[in-house]
Length: 486
Image (cartoon, rainbow, N blue to C red; front, top):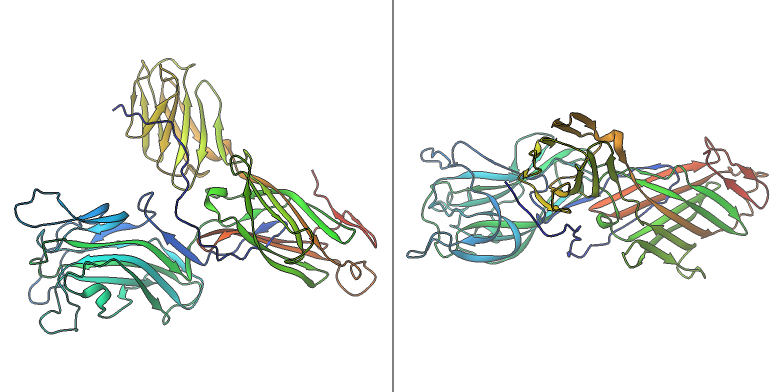
């Protein structure tokens, strides 16, 4: 199959980022859990999965459930008579999870389930956009309308059964509501920090008939879970940073190494710093970075006169230091970009004669002896003979993967062997009074930094301590310096 696209570009979300950010700058390895997870489904399912039950919950006699009809779509259909199949009943603002069944498609009990989240609080909140056009009803609400086209939002704790996080609510269960609503449900009992939870949106047509025909089904989008997050890597490594304290200023500069899938496009440009000097807190300050540079490759914060706090300057330079994979041989395979849900993979085959196939995580790219390409992936040929091609992988290339090449070239490449983590250069300047930090009194000769970059939906953080396991390189009554070993 040949499929070509326009030149590939990394896309940045147009959705504004909510900055509810507390960042700690640390020398060393930093980790802290995110406090929320957000899903807008513009790049796909984002780890949510579709499933179904064998029967509906119709109480009078069991009805076999049809296969789930959930799909990501931009509209809900209509089933008015004399209209062609596929007619649109309601256009949605963007890509939503949709179930187009009002019962006329058959009895159905199916659901869309979130990834496993780790609770960070004893109370978790789910907020989402919803649009419904179904029969009304909820079990136990009314005698006659108990069991007709019911929408359920449910939670499972530590692998237990899914239970509703609500009772009857007019926001979900009115007849042919057809109103865009933003809905919030809170679960404050039965959940503890550290518990593993999942949410699911369950739709049950019960009797499988007779829904409103103008618009059919249920749709939801923009799911925000507060108080729980996915177990994503959150380690930020700055162990090679340099520290210099002199003339009432503290200077820290070096490189910050980021986990796979984390880069400036995935983080909010805001933060805060916390510094503890000689056991005494020096500063705990929230920052908003300005984005600068033609390619938006620099974040800068400046407050030379300490109007807002002790931090005088904090700069991050992201220029050309994104994560990359690069294997060089007769077949040259490397990445142009690596992001959370997509990777641009480049294959150079000018030195290869004969057919070969590249397989990555179950996805295959086949070249015949004339370099004709057979793949389901979108791609862009950089040369007419297909000797240099960019492919759009719909997933993040990670170090735990393997690339297998068979045919004219036989290779088994562990991605980790040719993978370079992303890093950005940073510089921090803070003012402080070093009078008591001279080693002559009982206060400890210690300096601790805390940093977190990102916001509640995606953040990286960590800490380190200078003066204990990492001894000062130089220290007197005016200067304290730490330089890592090369």
